[in-house]
Image (cartoon, rainbow, N blue to C red):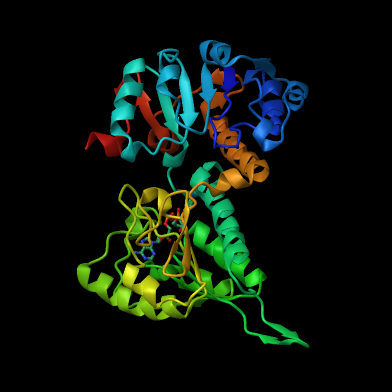
Length: 370
Ligand code: NAD
């Protein structure tokens, strides 16, 4: 197969396939084309890709010649005319939020594999870009919080007095949240965490965090590990209990998401007013509307003396490792799609079926067909 790696549009800095993956894929008989400069913002030169076996080309030629096209960011409309039946496109498209774009792409005939739709099953863990990128975000969120907090994270006993450790609250103990707990603990903070899935209590505690319990949460074991919408009564109780933790925290990191829906508001303006002056909120749900009232996506704002950071593109701030991890996820999906250099598209496979959004001129992704 001919695989094409495109240069991401700014502000994205990652690259979708790393030279390590290029080496393996070319060794099994595939040809790899890379757009000039595609690795530059991840500190990977064209020469590094050439040494790994890729050919460097112009964007138009990559789009024209490649059978499989890789770009993390959805392609621009200007690129759509070069898509056609028989071509395979890989990226992060959030199809449930982009129905019109999915129709447009289906009309081009291209087969789209949206990496964020990989089913959350054990066999697919090594392909799961949501998990790998959440790991980056959870880690970086804590570093951002620490850099913006006007005080220390760890407890210090110095000749100039004793400093109490910072109190960090993590709301949403999924992949990003657990990484945030671990990172905040390493920096010496006292960490509390909350999630509507009571089953994560053990994981929070194993990382040294204290789990904030709100009894009565509904957890659906059939939801693939994801949270489900809670009752109004539960939300009220949750809000009252969370408020107590929020107002005593120096840092709150929010990661609460419900697939395909707007993120729930968990920190209201009224709660922000009661928070400690100088406290920091890092809202990792910013791209989905945010968990904090007043969050601006990709902006840092000050609300009543509280710094609210709504940066939803944290993987792009660590492009070296984030590219490596994303690329490894893609490479693992390709192991399923390719037998050596031949396409092996088996729609009976749950992972292929769950990740393919458009095929043969139609939308085939079940959640969009309902
Ligand atoms: P996510 O990004 O969808 O959500 C983040 C967290 O927010 C979740 O833990 C969710 O329960 C929580 N949340 C949602 N609404 C909330 C609210 N109102 N208040 C507080 N918390 C709220 O989740 P994620 O991190 O992508 O993954 C969730 C879980 O999925 C994981 O912990 C894991 O169990 C499972 N998972 C499985 C695989 C796999 O097997 N391949 C891969 C990744 C994750």
